[in-house]
Amino acid sequence: MNLCDEFTIRALLERHGFHFSKSMGQNFLIDPEIPARIAASSEADEHCGVLEIGPGIGPLTAELAQRAGKVVSVELDRSLLPILAETMAAHPNVEIVPGDVMRLDLSALIAEKFQGLRPIVCANLPYNITTPVLTKFVETPAIETVTVLIQKEVAQRLAAPQGSADGGAFSLYLQYYMETSCLFDVPREKFLPSPKVTSAVLRCVRREKPAVEVADEAFFFKVIKGAFLLRRKTLVNSLSSALPGMEKAGIADAIAACGLPPAVRGEALTLADFAALSDALAKVQKS
Picture 1 (tube, rainbow, N blue to C red):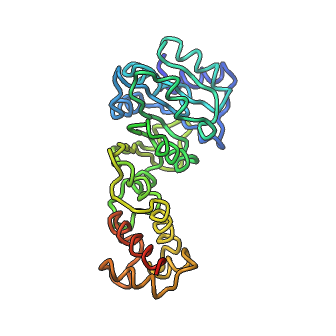
Picture 2: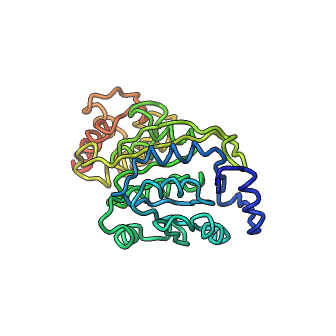
């Protein structure tokens, strides 16, 4: 069964009485080269256990099953379960887990399902859960790599060079733990139904250790978030709003101590800059 053939897809969905859900961000791939390319980009092999989120009718799942030791696909929409039972029948190394990925204990799931296998993630993610689900992947240390198809603008932002205007607080959070790269675009006409935006494949590889050393990780991320709180304002003004207990003069002194210009904005800082700044601000707090 060609799971990327539009006629086959429509017949399959009609036979099962399936209707697309906008709220779940369901867009199925209709070009077989795309799931094959995504699966290849994941570098899955027989030693890998692949966690997939939102398999849909399973075109990417099938590609992953041909490469990986095991594929566990988490599907929220129960109306897709009988369809997946049909389309994945030829792949004994695929297990469909009904449920909401945001409610699952991924560490426990991986320990149970992927014994002896290297855990990775590969998925065509619904756009509306990109940030929270990527956060959950980061917070699951067992996951070594993440290869996901997401909105192009988001992928570009998450892979943006540190200190560029294209990045943001979440970009820096992700890059603190992962090395990120934007691999290739997927045009909107490659989906059924066609989304309003272009998509792209983002690949994240977990670092052996975080990108920079920080004394207080929680405060470090508080400073990063604060730097982007008032994005169009200077760093000193944005941080003075984010750190209400700290005098603006003290914040300005900390910025100067790091060798940064007085009118610098948060978007111009790298992770190394924020590491130095969070240490300098911590000293100001103690003084």
